[in-house]
Length: 210
Image 1 (spheres, rainbow, N blue to C red):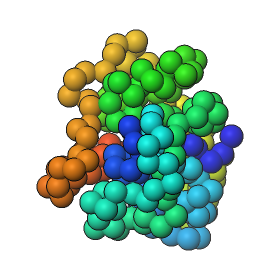
Image 2 (cartoon, one colour):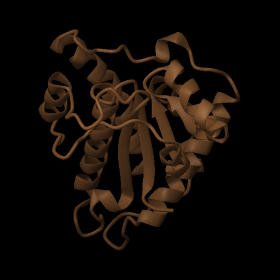
Image 3 (cartoon, rainbow, N blue to C red):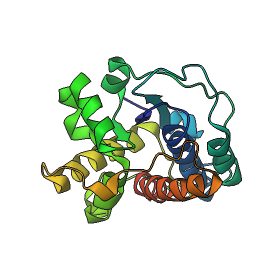
């Protein structure tokens, strides 16, 4: 049940998945800003965006500095982040799991095979999302006489994930869906990877709050 929960997964949980975690929150905040406080609750009531890594080498560490710079430069927040290793219960509780690469998708499914219909490589989800008809999803009421509710956003998000899974129709991710690992490669690479993340999570934010 609400809030709609998205789990982002990469290898060490200090670069790609933290950027995805915080940039998705930012994307939804920007959508809510357009609606105004009269009709929109705080973002944390609508969305739980968090992340973990397939390895625990960096557990407890802050976001990698160039990753943090990308989040901050785009208007997001990095406070309170601490890396952690992926656990099965986190997968169980997620409405949507987005991994940085196909290898990490396989890792998730090795832990929880029953999560296949709600687990995607992030680039794969972004590639398939435009094929979903937004008019076929449950509505999120907004306007001067309506309010965005956690229940409505959760229902729309769950339907969206099911629709993207139907578009995928059992096909696997493509090589171009993977996010490059920017660790140790400088700000230019981090900026390119953050752009790719932002494109998908921005589209997800629009889909959740049209």
